[in-house]
Image 1 (cartoon, rainbow, N blue to C red):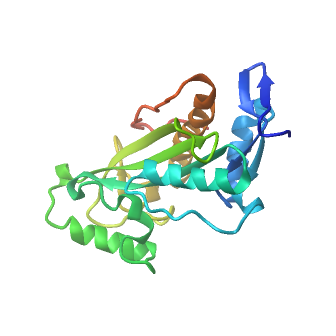
Image 2: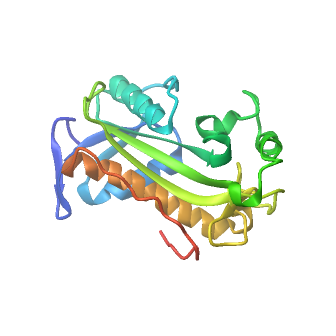
Amino acid sequence: GGAAGLEAVSEHGPAFPARLVLATGNAGKLREMRAILAPWHVEVSPLSEFTNAAAEETGLSFVENAILKARFAAETSGLPAIADDSGLEVDALHGAPGIYSARYSGEAADDEANNRKLLLELESVADEERTARYRCAMAYLRWPFDPAPIVCQASWDGWIARAPRGSDGFGYDPLFLVAGSARTAAETSSEVRRAWAWLVNTTRAASASGGIRSARYSVTPVTLPSLSIRR
């Protein structure tokens, strides 16, 4: 590792910070980001190394909350920061549950209650109008008040079933019918996790590499008709 102002270089290209902070305490996310940035020999530290506090997610979009979390991490650590926010969007509900995906049915919500509320809200909606997607947004900030944050997004399309199916997965997976498939995410757990992880990892990599090459980097929404993508 090194000072935040220094840059890491490898045969893959120049100019990553030698050290950055990932706004998470999640060990899995930390492992993934360290693997993505390994070719550049970047030291990636979790926010939990600096504080047990978390940013107030007061934004009204995934992008806003990702920026808020990255800003909090950069301010707390004094390092460049990466943060993400993700959830489920349903078109017939004007994007809900959206940023409230984890607490859709209330602050003490669990997956079952959230799924139950979603089905109730969509009860009168025709099958062809139940389109939805999982979305992940990620932000990279060089400084707490970086005027040009790098923002990346990826999405995974599908639609909402009329009843839960499958026993694997979590969250809205039992209701999320994967585009191009007759199965829900909870019925195709291992393949689905690889596909969604691939999308999220692509977004993370784009967020990091965007800091080198451009002021903006967007990940085109991806449909996974065959679930054949591998990490």
